[in-house]
Length: 213
Image 1: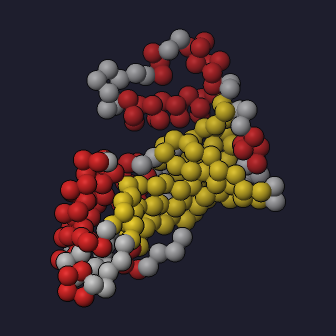
Image 2: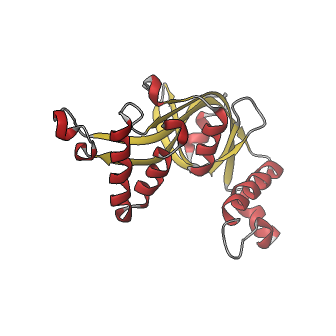
């Protein structure tokens, strides 16, 4: 991923936070058989330098057969994004030298995949994945709420994938290359359009990060 220095995010904790917040990722596998991409929910464990990603796929999904030899993979996490109108820039009235752009957040995690079929691992993974998202519900559901024989049967139909992250890169393009008054205009513009889509509000919040001022 091309990342100009003013858009590069190198703080591992911040990148982990982005992965947790936007955990529905794109698993990409490329080998002599071709390129394949699968959209999957991931759970991040931080017990390694750059962390470990865990997910699962249906046993009927042939992608896991391409990972049995420790294939190198890329996982892409896409955060909020928004069109940025040049009319939001204060300098438009002064010079007219402004053009549209697109602000966005993206995190790329590279590593080697390991296929896991052990029942205990799969059950723990499902607990971690569902507990994270169910914690926000009024009446949280747990894997243990379902009959044991039912979950055991369903687990036989999935395969686990674990990826130890070797390279972690992040790009937060939030108008950091613009003067402060233009950044203020972008924030105001995003606020005006926030009602049209929640992603504008999310990007406005990222644009308000003190680190970007």
